[in-house]
Length: 154
Image (cartoon, helix red, strand yellow):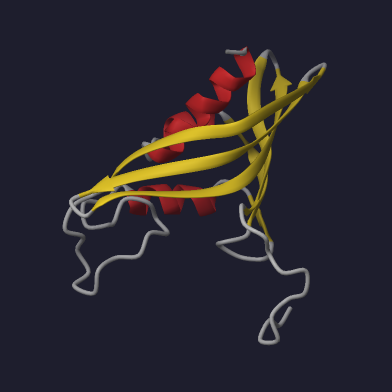
């Protein structure tokens, strides 16, 4: 496994572990992201994810900040989560690396195992000898329509 992939997997694990300290250590403060399932707009900086990870770490949440909670508000059990990087591809240009892959997230609960996926690109830059994530772009892993739905308003 390459040095970049090891660093990337540690970065991703910090997100799934809701470890904001490790997340900050692997990410620049001016991080930019496109997360299609959150908002159609760019997200800037770390405060958004700090809140998401802090909320997801609470005992009364479903596990990941964007997971739906049962109508009663408290999940029956918190999902056990693992991730895999399918079709991983790495491009390295001096102190810049671009990693693209399909992120597969498997969740185990008392109701069984489910798997969700989406495509990601993460750009890492070596700053003062340390690789940091500087940009993330996510897209659906299914055929999305070329035209926006009629109800979509920019």
